[in-house]
Image 1 (cartoon, rainbow, N blue to C red):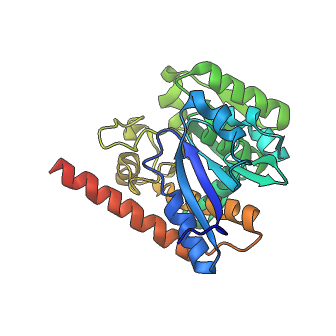
Image 2: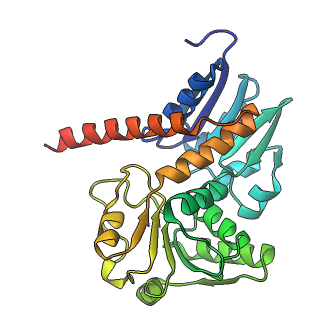
Image 3: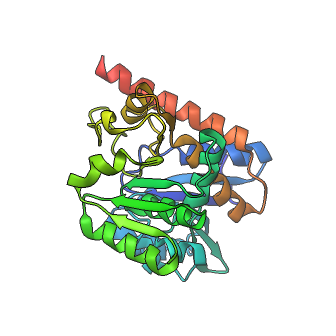
Amino acid sequence: MIKGTTKIFGVIGFPIEHTASPAIHNAAFAALGLDCAYLPLAVRPENLGRAVAGLSSLGIIGLNVTIPHKETVIACLDEVSEEARRIGAVNTVAIRSGKLIGYNTDGKGFVQALKEEGKIDIQGRRIVILGAGGAGRAVAVQSGLEGAGELIIFDKIAPRAKRLAADIGRNIPQLRVGVISWDKIKFNVGKADILINATPVGMNAGDKLLIDPEWLLPRTLVFDLVYNPQETRLMQASRERGCSVVGGLGMLIHQGALSFELWTGKEAPLDAMRKAAEEVINSQQSTVNSRER
C-alpha cells in the first residue's frame, strides 16, 4: 500500500507499456520490507525536459530511463558519473539533495549476464554489435573496458554508429573499432565471436530477423538484449544453427539490481527480481497469444 511515507521510484520511456521494471523493483522492495513503490511513467520525447525538471519537486527518489531517452536525458541532469559520460547514455538517475545524478548500469549488467549465462569472457573477442543507441553504447563501451579485441558496429542510422565509434576511440584508444554498412554485415557476422542485438527488433511478433542465421558460425555466441519475449526469433534461429544464445532477461535483472543498490544502499534480492520478471513477461506473452488465436 502506498502511504504518505512511501518513497517513490519509477521508469520513464515511450512507449512504456512493455516494461517489466515495475514488477521487478516492487518485488525487491517487498522482499526487503521497504516502504517504497516503483511506477511506470510514459514521457514523450518532446516532454522529457519538463518531466525530468519536476522529479525533485515531486519527491521522487530514483528513476530508470529507457527507450528513447537514454542519450537525450543527459542534458537534463545536474551531474553524470564518469561511466555514464564515457558511454554517452544514462539508464539510472539518483536524486540526492535536489540534485539529479545520472549513472549507467546497463554495461555492467550486460557483462554479468554474459559471464553467468554465456560462460564466456570478453577478453580478446571479436564482437559485432547491431544497434548504436543507448543500450548499444553501454554494451560497446563496457566490452571495450573489459578487454574486447575488436568491436564492429552497425546501425541503420550510420552517423549514430560513427559517433559511437569516435567516442570509444577517444576513451579507449587501444581498442580496434570499426563501423560497417549493411553490405558488409554478412562478412562480419561470419567472423564474430560474439554477436549482439542491441536494437528493439524482436520485441514484436511480426519483426523480421535482422540477419540470415546461415551467416553465423556455430562457435558464435549470440546475445539478444530483447527480454520480452524471453526467446526471440533470433535466439531460436541461432540455436538451430548450433550457436550458444543468451537473452536479455539476465541483463535486465543485473542492471536493475545495480540501480536498486545505488538508490537503497542494500543488496538486491536477485531471486525475487527474476521471479517477478518472469511472471510479468509470461503474463504479457499469454495475452499476446490469446489475441492472436
